[in-house]
Image 1 (cartoon, rainbow, N blue to C red):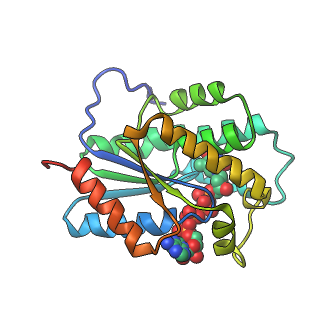
Image 2: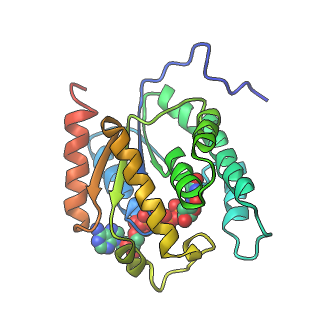
Image 3: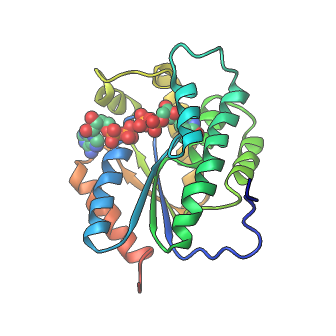
Length: 219
Ligand code: ADP
Ligand code: TYD
């Protein structure tokens, strides 16, 4: 087992961008469009999704999303998401950033803060501290929040497989949405908040131009 502390010499030269938002907000769609754009520009891109991306994290994902799963308590749920993330950071994200790649991540620490902290109403400060521990204090260069009405997002998902998390209801999604908005308002320099109800291409263009002007400036 290798030591997973980041103290002691790792050099991060890559760019780390995460996509956040309620279920059905369009994260996967935008991540794919940004990936394509970055690759067309000749950049090496690593894409990861949460929870998942490593053998351990995929097993945790199956456990978490299984309809018939045991009566998982809220704290265990928060710890499982964080466990999957710790392994993903250690095994994939940090090595890719050390190689100088662009890492695009479908959800990251802010998902646990939004869903388990604001949504499930677990103690917020403790959830935030847990994220610092799980990620070895690795923060994204940019967090893209796709913000939209919970009803619009739910309508998009109608007919698709409603997993255990998505069936938690609209009131829950609304708390999650408000949690994201509070986080982004508290630290506006860390976030790009986009109106997620716009057409896909319009959102993609907004994300691309923001990143080119603010994240890749001069490179
Ligand atoms: P998420 O990954 O956030 O759950 P997805 O990217 O999977 O969201 O999108 C959920 C659904 O909404 C998909 O059917 C997708 O095609 C559709 N969708 C994504 N972005 C938009 C958009 N801007 N306008 C309308 N529908 C969208
Ligand atoms: P995901 O597969 O990203 O769903 P979607 O593409 O529909 O947004 O995530 C599955 C569910 O897990 C989703 O409802 C969000 C939830 N989740 C948490 O509750 N906490 C977390 O830390 C993460 C990463 C996801």
